[in-house]
Amino acid sequence: MKSAEEKIWNYIDGLCSQEEALEIERLLQEDIAFQNLYQEILSFDENLKLTDLEEPSMGFTFQVMDKIRLQAQPLSLKAQVDKRIIYGIAASFILILGFIMAVAIAQTNWSASSGYFDFSLNYDAFKIGEGFSRTAIQAFLFFDIIMMLLTADYLLRKKSKLS
Image (cartoon, rainbow, N blue to C red):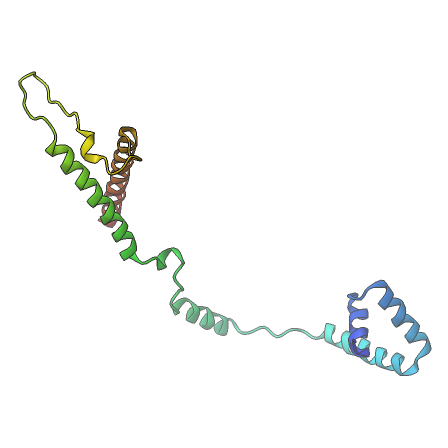
């Protein structure tokens, strides 16, 4: 339950509901002690509104802002990602891609008797289970090549920004 002072402050500030305002107005008409408290709080509120707020000096503001600038800024969540995780994922992709490229190079027919190289792969070497078809392997290779090109582009752009 609110105290009488709290009800009066809410009434003066206009923060009370209509029911509370009607109750306070009724108390102001009937209760002399409530009227005296209301007059006291009302005069205090008027004096409070008349006082000027003190502002800190410009030197103080400058010193505080200077100290804030010198403090270490918190790292964003993006900067807090552990680089070892990223390098581990990149290494696994590179190893898988390297293995697939080694198998593809080993199975390539390098004879040039017909005038062109035959790059047909023996996909039976890639069959780990029945779930991997020729299309799935080609899609995986395509994805790995795109990821490799994007990574190379990122690294080259990063190096060019540093220099």
